[in-house]
Structures are given as C-alpha cells and as structure tokens.
Image (cartoon, rainbow, N blue to C red; front, side):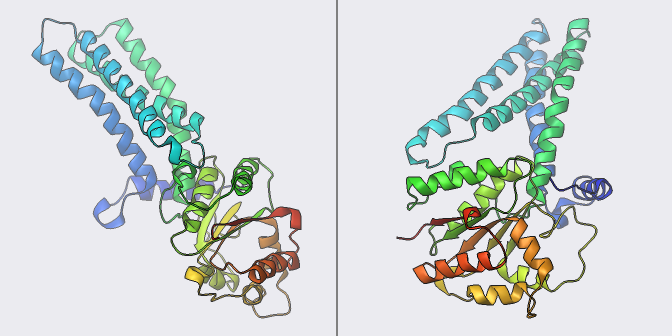
Length: 333
C-alpha cells in the first residue's frame, strides 16, 4: 500500500471538513459521512426527548429503548428489502460484510443518541453513564475506519459514486464476470501489482460505470486509486514534477482507471499513439513505461474491432506486461 504523507493528510482534512463554507467549496465525502452520522445521532436523540417531555410520568429510559428498537428495525428493513427486491437484476453480489458493518455503525449512532437523551432529561445513573461511555467506545473503531474509507474514495477523484452490485449492464458472460470478480479479489491483496483489465464497449453499455465500480470496491478496502481521463494522463506523461501537497497521484497510486481512451467509437487514439505519449515522443521513456507496467490499471476503451484489441494487448506487452496479467472484458456483441 502506498505510504501517505501524514502531514498532508491532516492538512487536507482540516481544509475539507472544518474550514470554509460549503456554499463555495462543495461537500467532501468525509464531511457528508460526518453529517450523516450526526443525523443518525440526532434522530435517536430528539424523538426520545420529545416523548419524555410529553409523557413525564414514564421513565425516559423507556422511550430511549423504544426509539432505539424502532430505528434498529428500520435499518434492518432498509438493508434487506432493496437488496432482495432487485436480486434478479443484479449481476454482481453485494459485499454483505461491508453492508452489515455499515448498518451496525448506523444503528449504534441511533442508539447512542437515544441513550444520551435519557442522560440529559433524567437523573444520571451509573447504568446510563456507563452505557453511553460503552457506546462511544464501541463507535471509536468504526468512526476511524469509515472516515478513513471515505478519504480513500474521496482522493480517488471518481466522477461518481458507484458500487459493483449496482452495475446492470446487459452483455457480460459468466467467464467475464469471473474475470471481474477475480480482479477485485486479487486487488484487495497487499502486494498485488501489474494487473491490467481492458474494458471494451460502445456508448451507454456501462464500461465507465464498470471501471469506476471495480476501483471503488478497492478504494473501500483502503487501496489507493486514481481516476483520470486519457487526455489528462497524456499531459502528465510530460511533467517533470508532481504536486507535493497531494496524498497520492497517478504515479504513486496502486490502481489507475484510465477513462475515455476512445470514447463513443471515435478511435481518437491508436495503441501506437498511446505508446508515443508514454515515451514522450522519444525512442523510449523507461520511467513512464515502468510505472504503467507495474501498476494495476483498468483501461476503459471504446474500440471493439478484433485487430484493435490485439494491438492494445501487444502495446502492453511492448512495455513489459506479461500476457497472464492482461484480462479483457467486452461489453459489445
């Protein structure tokens, strides 16, 4: 895993989440996650307080328990119903451990809000005090873990948030489905490198969605990913320095998604053209070739002709990628 500069890490988090106004700087994923959990806490807190004020003869802890149970039931239904309702249309299975972990985290925030309300409106007892302390202690790990996950998603600069289980493209046979699942499973391992996935397809066939979804699954496993368009990448090939303020970039990230190489069958870039950009129009740029050879890359390609596929595979072989590390998914038939 790429080592992240801790100083830059803290600096950017403060700038993104604590300083400035959202009206001009936008909302970061980390900020949105914090706001979401504060919402869960508040939805546990205020209903419990309101019920305690209305029904003063009943101990507040009773309403705290019922509010907590109500939100628990809601979250369980919220987890299971949408997933089972669209089960037949789903090509890739949801990551259940991740979803259950997320649901448990949300429920704990609901419960913390509900139990904290009893601490506010009634006489503090050892039970209430230790219950709240215990809930805060339980939430410490998921707070750090989820907040960090959002950072990995945030600095991948994905154009949209998309999970693999949401992808509903039409043309993907069982063999290609296995290729995608293996790429994700292999990518989660610590020392994986040099794996290339070429995704072919025409407009509206889901190739960009698929590429982003694969990388997003890996970002949620705290792998450093970078999304970039081919045009922007070409300019980076010629740069002699990188911004020291970034947590990682196209050179240092473990996974790279290169999008719009040939959008909408325009065939703007042939494999030979791409190699010329890599070599910066010199006989050979070994530094750029080494970076691409050793990096895990998802290539989002628009071309679909057989000779073009062979040329892209040949181009990767030219820079030293082994054929066993090149996999192809074709969404056009």
